[in-house]
Image 1 (tube, rainbow, N blue to C red):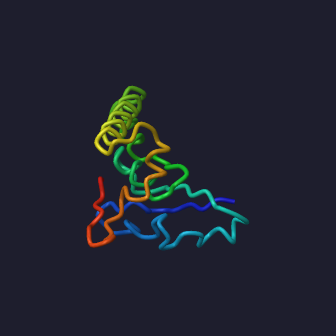
Image 2: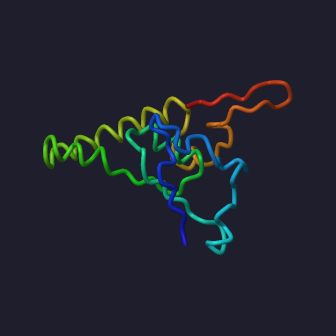
Length: 128
């Protein structure tokens, strides 16, 4: 069993952005239905590589991306889809460089990547 998080990355509408992060706010909410730790697949609101990094940092197992590739297909056919893959890859790589992550596992394992919390009188700020 898996959990599908629809519109989990806010695209200006505020739908779910910043809610239920993997740092305990909603952690485990769906595990009882899944019979153990539930994989989370994010679908909706993903428009760029930075959205993929945010979803992974929030604990998503996978990120489903469709609309940008449909746009590429509509504009330039097969070449448009190929170009969208290039753009997504470059955005993902650039974001990973900016936050100091060498691979996707480092994004998933950094508990302070998206959080802004006070700890011992200092603020831990988001790198995204």
